[in-house]
Length: 307
Ligand code: ADP
Image (cartoon, rainbow, N blue to C red; front, side, top):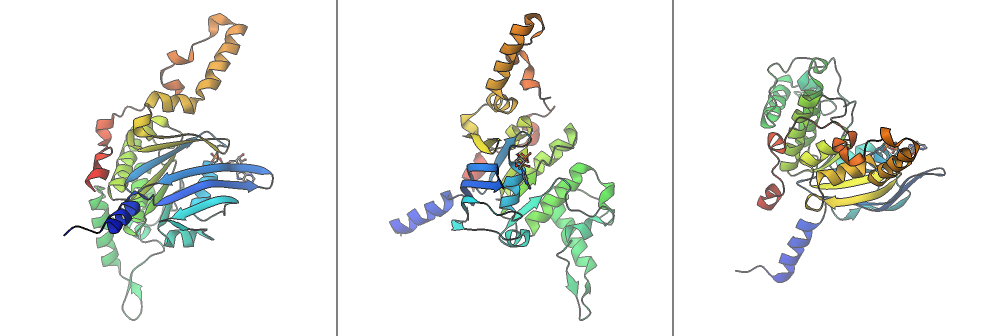
């Protein structure tokens, strides 16, 4: 029996509708316009990368989506419904998880305690902590993500930066996040640890979450991203899907493409012998990580189509 056309259309609308939509979002702090006319869509099963230099407005964007700040213009919709989160708790309850650079993990507490921080399971009339159950769940959830931590009683502070990021990501997925915002998760990490975190970004995406990956690093973004937004002085200067953009274009945009060319021109008039042409500087001066796309095992758009 065929599905009525209207139902089929409705299903398509729901499937194609982004999880999170920002339309012409603006944010002013007094007379500073931190964001102006910012529109972006975050879809389930996709990594949306938000790139930008210092002062571009990335933190302000995170704060709006995670309920720390309200926006002054535009509309934010979650699952098609207009939302204004009055606090991080409201945003969390709506399925928005934010993994900040400082991670909000307690370094002296064990891995399992951190996994359940603020969401502890209790048992019995005395409501004592159900340690066994929490350990079991934390262990199996981390295992599902491929994170092997032999001793869950170890303090989180003794783990590597990459492992700590992964615990925070696994925790957000377990507690029902629909959208996960990762604030510069690879900024303080070396090449190998960055690779580990990028793998878990892909896992979060394949678990069906809408991932917002905030980063300075176009190479890391391009390894895992489906969609790229570049912010500059509070405005979107580039909004492109992966198949509309090469890594060189993204790197050029981040390095300030046109501005670099103009600077080079100015310098050449000053002392032509000491100027290096921007296009001869590999990767616009940003060190390339020793990671290939194969190493990160990016499923590209296939995973989405399979879903
Ligand atoms: P990024 O995270 O990309 O470095 P921010 O969102 O922190 O950018 O900042 C964007 C702009 O908004 C900057 O010009 C910054 O000085 C300004 N800004 C950010 N937070 C505040 C605030 N609380 N009060 C006034 N101005 C702010």
